[in-house]
Image 1: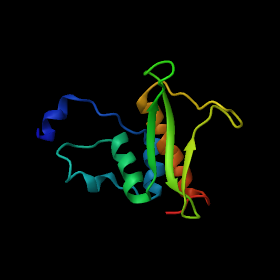
Image 2 (image 1 turned 45 degrees about the vertical axis):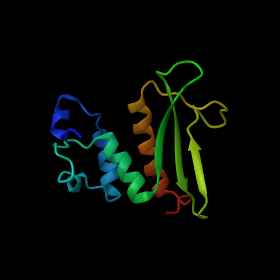
Image 3 (image 1 turned 90 degrees about the horizontal axis):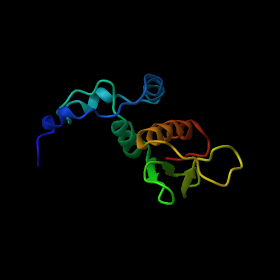
Image 4 (image 1 turned 60 degrees about the vertical axis):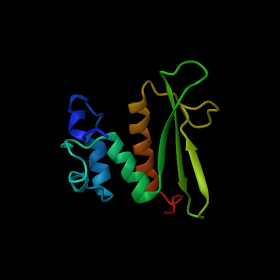
Length: 129
């Protein structure tokens, strides 16, 4: 396995400062992960926020390629346990009442939208750890 320092040439997608502030308000502290990853995280990456939602809150954010038309657009699926202890799923719609799922122009755009939905879930009454 290669050393993570060899990945420095890659620009890892980061979360916006607004999303970072919302996550920090829920207890997200990306500084604790710096010792386990061999490169500086400044600002935190989308993958790190996704991992935190999954490991800390059991909220799984999954961008899904749109197989019907192109692989360059993504749907978004969010899987979590609701307040009744049942597995539940959210698929974002373009607007309330739409049958078709919302399409995102990139994986990263879908992932950040999913992270924001995860934040809403944590604050809602339908979410149950």
